[in-house]
Image (cartoon, rainbow, N blue to C red; front, side):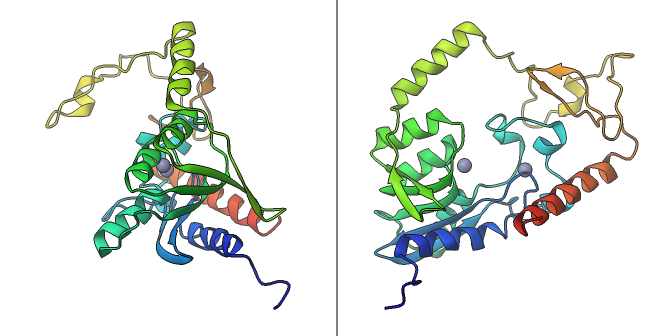
Length: 251
Ligand SMILES: [Zn+2]
Ligand SMILES: [Zn+2]
């Protein structure tokens, strides 16, 4: 047998990278493959819902606002790779119960609870993500978590924290520094803009590339009053995609 024949794990991890390349968010591309009995069942990459424009073309608000990793995931409309792999199973009528999930990035809290309830028994991911709640959900639900090492081409089992431990850490953090509460949000049918009038003279100076002073510990890139906002956002998305492409090709 050829010595360079990839192992089953290598084969599926390589596949996640092929799938990931189709991702349509400039912020991050993720690929997922669901497998059972050494057979591929479904695949998914991250991207906007049906009938939405591609974020690669119109930009991602998380990118635009410079939101740090792990924060405010919901303001990006994209479905995650794991979600799309699960949805593909639902729309095509494939049972993924008892399967394994291979993914380029560690699943977030939303994906983790979906993965747990699909009956997926093992997750193999390559890139870690700062999300102890997600790990706690998987560990507590009895899903094995394995981390893939691209150099040694082997996966090792991650000793996860429990959901309770993650909650304890959150309790501690909130006691020390509670996050600022969200302002009043509109109910369905109400105009979101009508509720948050911008006080006269209080607008932050916005330049196409500028960012406002640190807010919540990071610099917000404020393009709200830039006259050519759409153009700037598109350019940011293109620059990001171009940078990713160069990194992939080894500069
Ligand atoms: Zn996005
Ligand atoms: Zn996710």
